[in-house]
Amino acid sequence: MQDMEISNYIINFCHLLYMKNMVNSTGGNVSLRKNDVVFITSTGSLLGKLTPEMIIKVKLDGSVLGSGKPSKETAMHLGIYNARPGICGIVHPHPPYSIAYSCIVQPYDMEFVDMPAFTPGFAKRIGRMGFVPYSKPGSGDLANCVKKLIAKYNGLLLQNHGIVTVGSDLEEALALSEEIEENAQLYFLTYGHPSARVLSPEDMGELIGKPLA
Image (cartoon, rainbow, N blue to C red; front, side):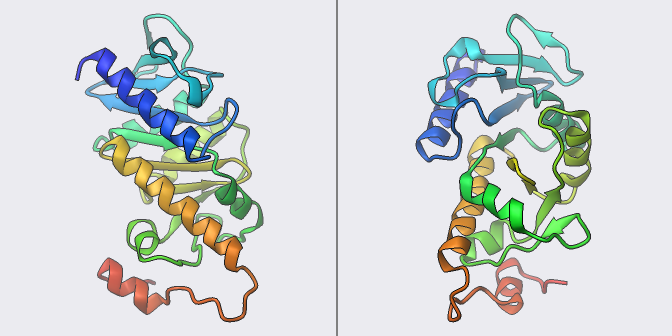
């Protein structure tokens, strides 16, 4: 794809995130990597009203190509791409149910969380999420923690902040975000119900092809 095609492709994904209530106001950011260039949403932009000039090109070393100011989370995106060369799409939305879950969950050993799985899709595609304790958005601490955990997980839960999902393309990354948010919503819809059924470790092991530790 040419640069304008890539920009329009990202814009369509951002508009979809907005319509799905995964972002609001100026929250969230999306990027796509093509070779050694990253196309990322600009800082302070409304993802539901993006235009082509709001997609900024950045090299993997952080240098900006052309005009405009990239997202304040650019260091986080670049850290992911540098840590995992096979990743070409990153979605960082602020979905409400996932954020709510991040505020109450007690993560195991502060590295991952096992959200109860309500659907086979969540169990198979996500299962265990990396957990990032709260750090100021756009900070080096946040970028470093995400870079460390992304080596193990395709989905990260950012405390009081949102989620980060990655994929070989934006479709894959978006699908993971949708699975996490749907499962978080089901968690709150069934929370406290004595007969609510979640997938057992055996169910999940069958889905992912190996037993869960």
